[in-house]
Length: 110
Length: 119
View 1: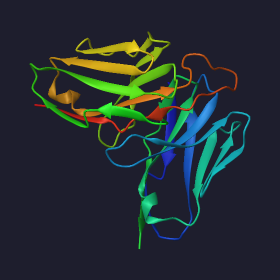
View 2: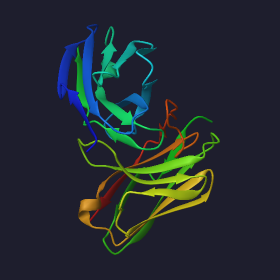
View 3: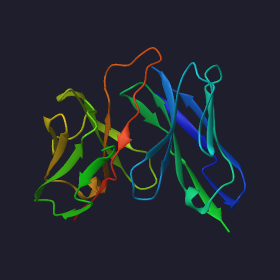
């Protein structure tokens, strides 16, 4: 059964600090790993997409890594802002069939 | 135009009502998706349309009926829903859909969702 597990489930950090979210996946077939940001009650917004041959990809203050051998990915957020407060969802799969993780709920405070 | 729009934003309906959710994109995408998301849970795939043909139906109950009138529009017709069907319904689109193996990928763009409440 395809699974995407994320840790931690929730995280509180101070504004300006960095944080790293983790994702372990068991997905087949697999061709890409995605990270989405989702505000409560809104649709997910894509942050990064990596194919299995890519190791890292950045989007502004967001940097994702992928280790296809260990089936692990991480999302690093640099210099966090209050607007980063959201759920971050790791997603693995193919072009049309995705397996979503349950997300990490991040809260950035003053 | 680089967004997916969904209407209505909120919908409250009784179990005997018939209603429809609408989704629209003008990015030239040829694959469109319906997802259901319960609170604090990840989105669950319901249907995939590829080139206006239904390509994936994830064993969704028949009280949900999708329709793709053209490459830009996707509807979800609702009839005789149950209270447990209350959720956020998300539409997404991607350049292509059911193709894409061996390293290829397609970014899915999500709409803002329709918050559905069934009384």
